[in-house]
Amino acid sequence: MRLAKYLAHGGVASRRAAEQLIRAGRVTIGGAVVTDPARDAGEGDDVRVDGERVSPEPREVWMLNKPQGVVSTAKEPGRRKAVTDMVDSGARLYPVGRLDVDSSGLILLSNDGELANRIMHPRYGVAKTYRVRLRRPPADRDLRRLERGVSLEDGPTAPARVLRTGESEIEISIREGRNRQVRRMVEAIDNDVLELQRVRLGSLELGGLGAGQSRSPGIRGRSGASGKIPRRERRTSIRCARRGPGGCQPARGHPRRGRGADERADQPQRTRARARRQLPVHGHTTTSTPSSRRSQPDASDSNRCRCYAHARSTFRARCRG
Image (cartoon, rainbow, N blue to C red):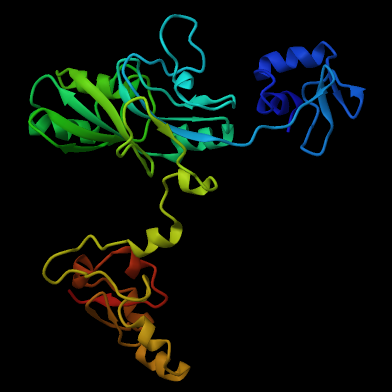
């Protein structure tokens, strides 16, 4: 990594201050003075600042239940307390994301910049869930507006998940990170927020963590922080849009070949080839269609099932629903 970043991870100073130390000639690698902040440095290098060796800090992640009145910054020059002052750690921790000073709930603190980027960058779509108490009971049409998205000064919001938990209480999950977004969304439906608390961030839940308390969640690796569904789970969770009497039913076995694929795996290849001419797929009876008839329009085309599993089948079949 870059030398300035290496010094920042070692707790020497911020990246900008580390660049000034390097240009001042106070940093050496292997006994040689280095003045280029972009110089590569690793754990095997002998990096020293003013003669003292620098080693990267171990990665730390902390969950904090931020009370109201605490600022979501690393340092607060005023009288207000910062979130980093509430965690008993000697590492240079930074808040992952932000919570308004008048909001409370779950916030992460870490010295791992890559982990923070995977959690907070919008392209990873990590869900953030808030428990909101409103001034007036919201109407059902207002909750539907929040779910579809409302227009704000900086553009429309993405669809959200909204759940009514009380007469004037809702739980809303968003995957964006705009400034005071939940409060502005509530203002867009002509209501006001009296209390806002973040209760979930991706797979991490606030649980029974008391106000002002912190603990280490023990995150292993960075893949679980993205909040995305693995590809295998996405394929097997596909459901046909034609539900109801006569419509498709969820397949058992292979997600594309349909019901009975596991049983056919034990049959000889020739037997499977003959059985492929008439297979039960998603509860429908399917028959092979000669190539001479495929090009001809058929009145049954409008009733043909067009779910993902049928469209991607390895053989062409017509669904008789």
